[in-house]
View 1 (tube, helix red, strand yellow):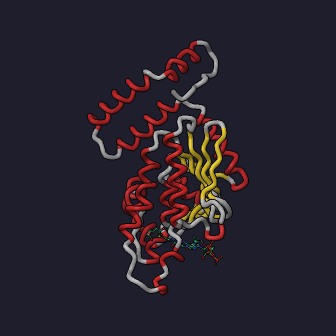
View 2 (cartoon, helix red, strand yellow; view 1 turned 120 degrees about the horizontal axis):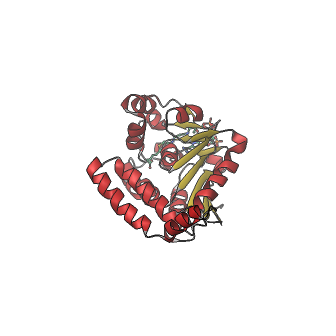
View 3 (cartoon, helix red, strand yellow; view 1 turned 90 degrees about the vertical axis):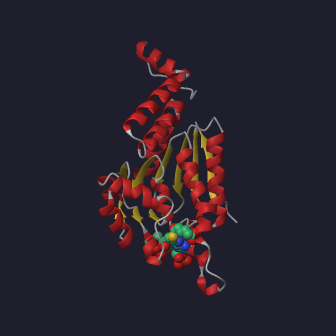
Amino acid sequence: EKTAVLETFDSGVLTLVLNRPDKLNAFNEEMHMALRTGLERARDDTDVRAVLLTGEGRGFCAGQDLGDRDPRKGGPAPDLGHTLETFYNPTLRLLRDLPKPVICAVNGVAAGAGANIALACDIVLAAQSAKFIQAFSKIGLIPDAGGSWSLTRILGEPRAKALMMTAEPLTAQTAMDWGLIWRAIPDEDLMTEAQSLALRLAAGPTVGLGLTKMLVQAAATSDLDTQLDAERDAQRTAGQTADYAEGVTAFLEKRAPNFRGD
Ligand code: T3D
């Protein structure tokens, strides 16, 4: 049995590759746990300064493995609230709470929870041929993995509802035009660009980047006064890092900074 998520570490970047290509990297319990283990390592290991998430084969992730939900096998209907609470929601929270940049390289179709996990990453690059599909309505489910929240906030109700109710595929180009992802990239250049972005961010001021991520996320639910207070507190912390001292010194010495991540 192959490892459900391939993990490699190089120059501060932890690369996690969803690895069930025969099923377009659909989630079974093993892949859930392997991804969670990888994200926990990213959180706990101070050598990890950026994460790159992608998929093996022609798809990024087709969401839940429906083979594990076959009603024809009999038995009571599964409690999908329980599976969200046990498997999907902890992964979403890990991604959002990780105080380091998470780059997603969407190498092919991203459907159902697969689409929404991609969209929960901090910077999303997608191959031109990739598609995002809110596939849930095709099987009678609701958009999970944070999709009902993130798509509504980013796109507004009209586009969010239409995408979710029709399950029409969204091209990478339209996803970029609508501000849902950072960039659509020619297929052959996707991994090179994603790796170079991940390396660049891993060589950045990690504490400041993590604080930036948290501020942006907090802005979704705070008013300006609360956000100004949060910026004050975060800037106080950033101003005490060695990377801030290095950044200013490098500027004054007219050289590139050498950030260490602390
Ligand atoms: O259950 C819970 O815990 C609740 C949480 C739910 C979260 C969810 O994600 S619900 C949504 C589940 N996902 C879907 O409904 C998407 C199902 N897949 C598709 O609609 C299509 O496969 C795609 C549009 C993603 C891609 O289409 P296409 O034509 O490029 O590929 P394909 O031929 O359909 O798939 C290739 C293989 O992957 C195929 O296997 P085969 O025939 O070669 O042996 C197909 O069955 C398999 N596959 C694709 N998606 C899934 C899958 N197998 C199991 N589960 C899948 N989700």
